[in-house]
Length: 86
Image 1 (tube, rainbow, N blue to C red):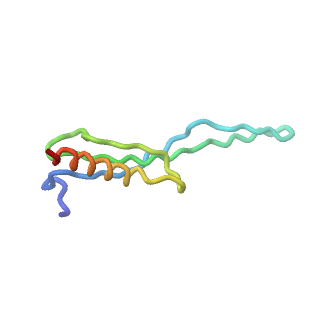
Image 2: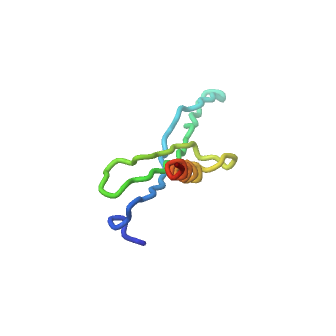
Image 3: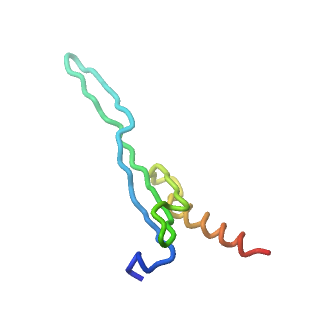
């Protein structure tokens, strides 16, 4: 399906880039400032007709962690399975 308006649930994956501090180093008469940039991955599920996500996960982007998107999908799947059990 390619039309989000026709879907019951929409998965939205995005990034939030920001500066989370800086490091300053002085060499002689010159000071160098290096901003510490952070990229967060934001994954959300939005129900049809709703403006706000009913579930959202944010995690700092890293090559060494399980992705926020996979965690979001796994958590949603577990919630559905728990509700399906008597």
